[in-house]
Image (cartoon, rainbow, N blue to C red; front, side, top):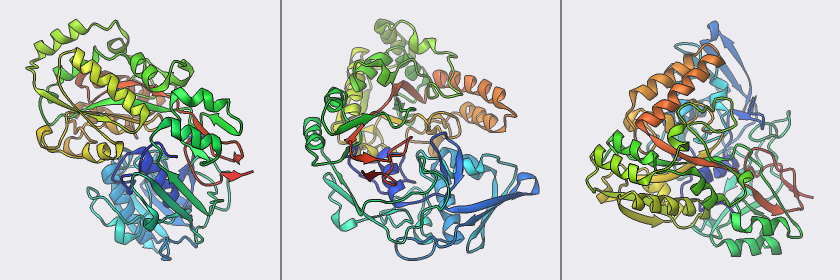
Length: 495
């Protein structure tokens, strides 16, 4: 039972985690990342680096095939990387340093750089969203702003289109032509990915009590994200195991649309920070056990090397809603209607959007709280239409902690206007600091820049952090060999 319905099949077009999980079943990547976040070769046999770091040659493993039987070639890799780089934060940074990507031979990709980019393999092997997946050339040439609906990949499972029932069921079949990496240790997205089940079926069961009963009776084997109120019950249930697979969790945030009033005004966005009490959001979404969440979260994932306390007083100081109302008035808020997208079918997200809606009302926003299923919200948030014509002013989302651990992969740290992640902040200072981070000579310099980036987030407010949820998963205890770090359907087997 997945966390939400699968509404989008293209893991390049969307940053939705559910589509990433679909992506790692259907597609493969040039490199992988193990649970210690080290980059390992995956589809590539290896690479060489020449010309003082400005020429990389990647050689594909022999025998790789797509689900349609066609071989995986360098000619497929080139447009796949170019399309992914247009949508992904890390990919965009890489493409900015690229002079040319070309197929030098059927199994050799040459990447000529304008300047050295030591993190090239890390970019191509990132395990978070957006997924750097390799597609057939015929699909990879699709414009990056258009969704792909044909999920032909070269991954361990094939998506069975004829058995897909949106809102109810998703089915995958083992791909007999998949060639697992022959060496290494299975870990997150690295090492041999061995499909041990003939079929994987996702059952969409939005009601938590029904889902818990289905797991307890063995009707289903695995519930990705149990709600906090039933987790203790499941932990005591015979034949059920619970655990936190990904210790970096998921950082939650509110995202503003910079294109339209009132949140085209930075002073109004800044004023709202003073109303946010991260503890309220975390207790509502993840329960009373503080071991399952973190408040006091800034721009970067807590517990990771670049996390910082600089400027955190704006989030951790005393909350004063009267002061927020005065600040909104002083900033020029005049009662404009605010469209906030709520979520109905993912309990964790529903709880967060309910807390946020209550907060917005209490500080005097003229709130239009529009509730829909998560799949609809994922698609609607891509709209740049005015809020009164199907667009929006605020939405909630969350990224894996690893995605928000550095400027390289943190999509909501981009300030590149129309090309930025949904909300489209135009913030040259954010971009300047991010570029400086990539060029920093050592970790100390990177850390100093991240301090400045966090201060800039609190100044211009592309988003407001709400806290980090450490998500537990629950499954029948006869399932073994799940990889640490995230939800993957390879290597897991029934004992």
